Image (tube, rainbow, N blue to C red; front, side):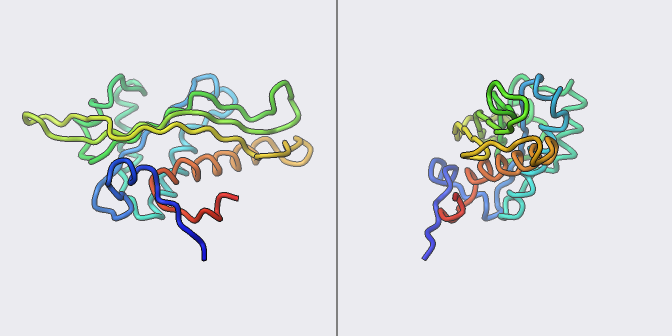
Length: 186
């Protein structure tokens, strides 16, 4: 019998987003340097994460509306309360990828991805007629892909590797918000 691992968000907050009653707005951010080698990294990460969350029953805010809001506001925000004021979401998740690389350290032909960052989720509330947000959940993540042997650029294209790496990263981040079988980790 396969055992399911409860997700950290529910364990820490008591809220199960997979029931579809509460909505979640997701924003993914990364260092600007990574966008030089992988210009669609933030988009691909957000898209993959939202797809996985929707498959598990999480009600998510339209990424098109969030993108439009970001475009209208200079592409960034200083305080999550700005998003809380302009969106009717119950929770706002900000995924900050602080470090990311696609190659083994000191190598230009051996691919081994690494990502490290923080997930912060804020619960929104209306106080005095204005929506605001309070941090409800925080979790760090660190991931290496593949876990063991790096992949040579002669075995797989860099683009295909990046897609595989982002897929693995979105799976790990999404698991913070839904139960999963422990056997799926290996």
